[in-house]
Length: 158
Image 1 (cartoon, one colour):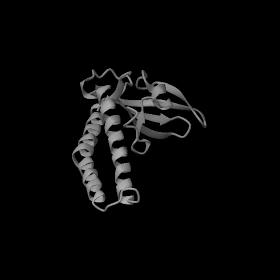
Image 2 (cartoon, rainbow, N blue to C red):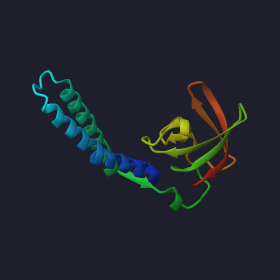
Image 3 (cartoon, helix red, strand yellow):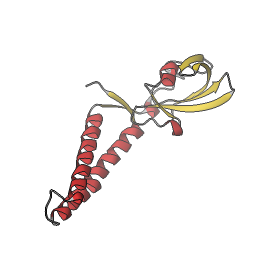
Image 4 (cartoon, helix red, strand yellow):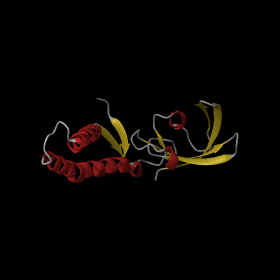
């Protein structure tokens, strides 16, 4: 399996979720199953079937997170030399040259991406177009609505 790029913060969040699933969620589901078993006939016991379904989801998520963490290539942007180039983990301020709107994005791994918080996936069209660019570069990004021109205003490694 190929390495999964991830920021330090993203890896920490996944570890926290894994700890929560293993330490809180899994024991609660096991207790729910035990309680439901006490109610008698398992064939017609909706509580039992719901708890077993939740157990399946929980165990699947635990396996998924463990696989991602075992293949994670954790990149701490704070330890990277500040070259001014747009790289994975960088925070980039852009000016949309068509609308004169300023936007700031942070390039993160797929699991961390949240467009509402301006966290974009390294595999998104915007990030792919920005990687390797420097301050004052103009880049054309292909979007579903057509090509959009951006000027790179600032590149920060924060």
